[in-house]
Image (tube, rainbow, N blue to C red; front, side):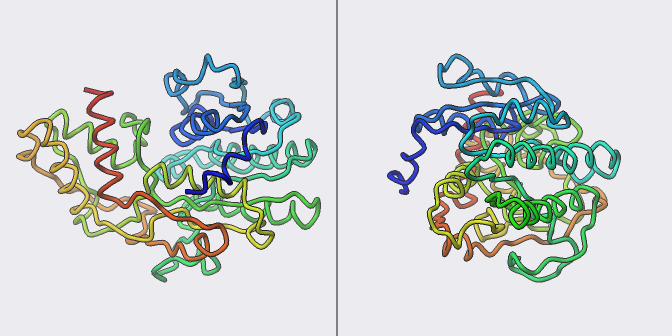
Length: 332
């Protein structure tokens, strides 16, 4: 699927910011597999060196250790580059509520630095990680790209500002951009540890240890959980699409289906108990709802299907099975 289209990336020079992170490192691996020359820019504040073990000795891979808050570093990393996949950001709604200033410095000032660097390096296309948090308090379901609400966290504000800046850089400087609004991405190499770990890896590691996962609220909050390979496909489509209408847009990057937290934990217990039957007996606990959380998230993927030719290959069950297998083999 799209194989011929993606093969055109062979010998392209592509910068992946945040390339040692969960999504970024998976993108680096895929791009190298396609024959691209890959530059990874990361300051390792949330990215991990072990995420790069598979690529670090590849002759087509270059690591630049640096921070997007430094314009000179961004300019150096962008020099001679054809495409930029900008993944570097400080994620997490709770982190942004605790420390809005650093979140803004990285996600807004750092983003602006990268746009300026991309403009000055005359890159062909700047593709960036946007966020479903931009929908804010909009109650519309499914979420459609041109109907958003009021942001509910500092993080959400920063990701919306990214979209506004990208728009201006097209109209003012003719820099082609595409924003990908990620919906609850999960899969191999996603960190299960730390205060801001995402729900799937966190619950997986707790169940593997026979610890009770704590669901925020009654478990009926639902999300459009999106497997990493769907996200990789969207990034590749975004940099290779030759449809002029597809550029300078934002797209939901999701499956177009939702799963609530009770259903999610049931599936995780089922898939993990294949390895360890005792996991089926682990109790689930409930805590208070989390500040800044939206109750339900479900994406319309029609725009991406129509303009980019997106065809998600992994629905929730298929993706969870892959993820659980990876965690069991790599973290047990």
